[in-house]
Length: 267
Image (cartoon, rainbow, N blue to C red; front, side, top):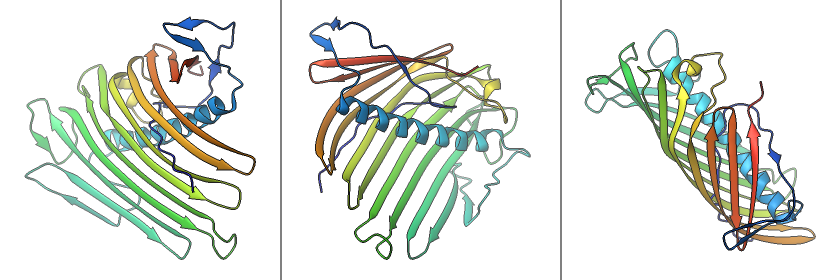
């Protein structure tokens, strides 16, 4: 099975629709604008969509803790929740196991007030929310499709700072490992990305609101190896996302080529 290491990712809260510009070829330093119909580019972009969806789901999960009413930790599915009064960390663990699927989540988080004191429960003075998220997933369907297997792990460490102010800033990382094999495809991927000063209007983080960043960057790296029935692909790329009020601009480099596109948030 080919090895895919994917250092890639995007941050997106809300629906994912990419709009790319495919005009005349141009240059960017020593790079040349790539072909937007190139199969390797389309594979890389599809993988980026997958990472964006993971990040969107995780951010909405973080919002559940930040904005849950009444205040305090109340996860929807409880295997166990613990609170360490010394370190301030809440730990929520959830797991499921059957002959086909094994799935586990460890979600650790803590609140800090304006005086840099840890809090057991969120209140109006809560200013910082830290989160450490780890997910593990394994599935196999040997009895139905012989040789089909999927493995996925996700690690995220984030800090939301400014919850007591009008603007909240998100910093952190995103790391994902994903592998699978079946009769028609083999792959293995790893994703590493870094979020830097991604800004949200704090009021947009409240429940039932769609929160989109209006500033900041997300940088990621990508290496992919995929085996399909009629082709193999090896892709290494570097991706930078720059957020603005209304959307983001994406810039992808691979070898001597670059691609770029702009996404606008749906109104």
